[in-house]
Image (tube, rainbow over all chains, first blue to last red):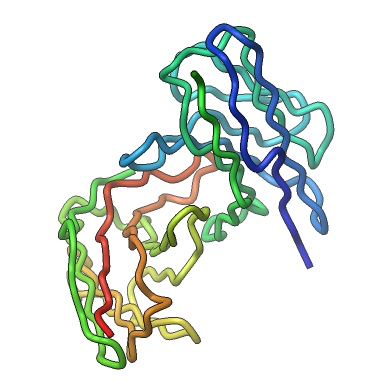
Length: 113
Length: 110
């Protein structure tokens, strides 16, 4: 069966510090991968998606970046965090078929102080 | 993705059926209707999806209007564990992710 992992589960970082969040998927190959963010009291916002290794599409211009160094690994990064980067970061995957379900990871709760 | 409209919140009693409405008057002929729910401090969880016909699974039923401009998620017997935010989402099947609205906050009273 397929599973999706995210770490860390929680993170507290000072403003201006770098960020690296990791997401890995097991039990499937060539998934479409997604990063979403949910700010406190708000809905989910799609940040990035990837249909293959090295292929990244950005939905929202900001100080975050994403990379996909391996088929089942998706990384979210920042060189300098802002207070507004605080939120609940969720990774998701699909197999890419037209009606396919998105499966979400457990999330990382990031607090920038 | 086309826009959906849902009530901000709904309240129901435990062990009673719950009908969660969703309006999507600008739906295109190729859009699927998806429902997800999000429990507190967790990622969204798939509930059900459909195109034209009503759908049933172990979690819920999805009733789709004949003109497809609205749909209703039906929880047949709500439990306290069904308290969550329910999202109705239209998807044309592209790889570019889902557009989440504010959803409906479902409150279940014991």
